[in-house]
Image (cartoon, rainbow, N blue to C red; front, top):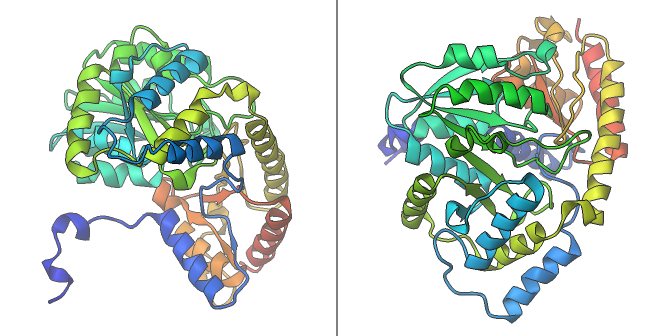
Length: 402
């Protein structure tokens, strides 16, 4: 018996590039090699103590039974209030579905919306799992591309030109993984005007980095009344509250989509972990403007961003934008393609990342995985000291390429 008995579905599925690079770096670390891992999208801060307290209270109160499929009632109520407080959006608790991470929330929506042949417009660069999930759900991906010169943000005209009779949905991610780009109110308003002309178009708005913003205010596409009933919000507590291991995400959607996602989730996983849910309720119930841990984390990310951008811009041949949110830098490194250190020829960003892992012992993620082969992704969710050392290693290794 061998792998040929596996389904075409799984054989055609690409491994997550971010998780693959993290795995490779851990394997090298296990061999005693000093690897600086800038591939993982995980805040290097602990979950706030008040959130942990919420989890401990849930344990002491024996909230340990099977939860309802769409989430515990007080948790969905807390999310409903958060959306009103932070985003001025009205969603009933019944319109909210709590899942095992925002990744499951996204998968639920894709599987509930897409039939074979349905198109979904995906701006590139995009998060690595979007396209693989869409393919699994049977949808067709229609890419619209924005390069570094456009701050990696697509225009309303690009979106309008991409819509066809087969278009079922549009995916928007702001703040963005992998670029850190953030759409302004004016940019979102212009996009909403395009969407309003297509009342059957669903917008999937991934807002998981909502709280990691360095200037301005977060803008949700659902905040434009003319399209609110077309928008599905995806969010969670992993990034803003440093709760990656708690595995809680959620969606807020028109009732019929929320009902469909509950139906699907009921057959796959049922409800998310009850203790994690209560911890998440504690997190979202707090006003983000009054959470010291969140302010400290965002300030640290901004300081690291400024340091990393300055150092990367000092490397000849590297082009960067200035990320306004999240904790990633997505520099254009295409000037190094076709060069060699005498042993290794670098022809694309995947080979460049492999070269930097082997030569500089720094783990990065190639831009091919995000839909932009000219770039690489660096996560600055690590200390300033490690960032300085990592960039020095990268600079020295790149200098050998002629």
